[in-house]
Image (cartoon, rainbow, N blue to C red; front, side):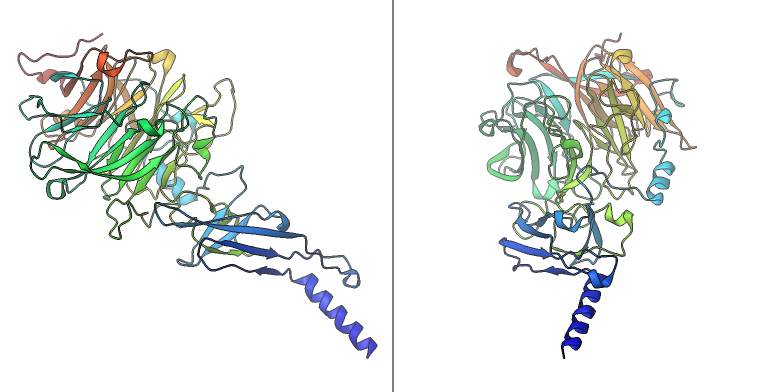
Length: 545
């Protein structure tokens, strides 16, 4: 009997040594704490010396996102002696990843790399364009004045409703209508000055975006720095007045999303509906300089990102998460699997990633543009003191791109004093230098798709807030990019938008850091891009340098 018991104990020890035991106990999915006990067996060289040691007890907390209703899990696994955990999504059956904290960037498959090369996106720093030889088409342009008298205009947008109206966004919190004949209506469309914080130049009312079905539903969205929240970014939905199509209903305000802003600068601000019907939001890294929060690479924050949400949720929520967002299910309750998984799959686990994120590694995406014809995305990012960059995302991108900040600034190391550094993320297609090109802030203007100037078709225009220079960027039939200066003005370029015919309009201000305040600055102007050889007779044009 004694020998039988001894033999049984030896067999049990051998089994335990051969098979690590993981026991998980989770509470019902109600936001309460769920405890997980992980047993780790340390194998000895000889079975007779086997010992079982439980070395850890890790806790797992399920959190519920108040806005989206998305549930998330954060786990601590110090006891498992591994930094990698494969997580199987209980709903979709797909595997996702939490890699070590030092590596937040997603790993690229060979297919993704091939797709970027096919789109002409550089995979080598030397291939990133700087302004050079003229474009393969005559893209010479001029700016023609449309209207003036605006208070720090920062953007212009069309409701695409057949009215021919343009809506100019004034930084201090007012939206004004310019009729098709160029006349500014006396009464503003929207006036929220009492809610908008605009004391610092980079704060204020950033943008307005009309719902794709605005003509029928009257819905539109604004993004602004809220005064009583110390400048936090607020994305708010409004409705058109039932009595007057030229007025918004101020009582219809509905908060969609709040983005906490720790400092007054680098707020992003752009809103744009993509061809997919989802709302894209540009969010800066939170400010100061050098990304002190490391927000660009931190998937737990909305700062330093391009966000993508569905504002057509039918269940009463302000917004829903598109199912194909790259981190849509990252915070969902999941089962842990430790073995039989590839390193590529391990590298994709991000259990605390915000599901709203479409792309990351951005510093201050102020103004971005979708190509109305191809649905490609042009995504400029305002750089720090040395380089401005223009990123390109093809229409078939699955999202999840890491654009490198704050490891990189364009194709260069950050800080700039580092002469050598590893390449992180996706390179821009073009960039320009502050010292060489007198720049400071890249302003995306848009892709011309109108019928009036065939030579400009497909050219992406961007400018600089400090220099007033405008560049053209385009791909030729051989998939080769070209980037060149097309106009040199003395303007402070701030924003742009397109009308129903594909014509590009540009806003300019007389505004500087250090004041005076927006209402005390000289008035700003709305301009229209035309081909240089087709300026209407008698039109007032931009002075050139």
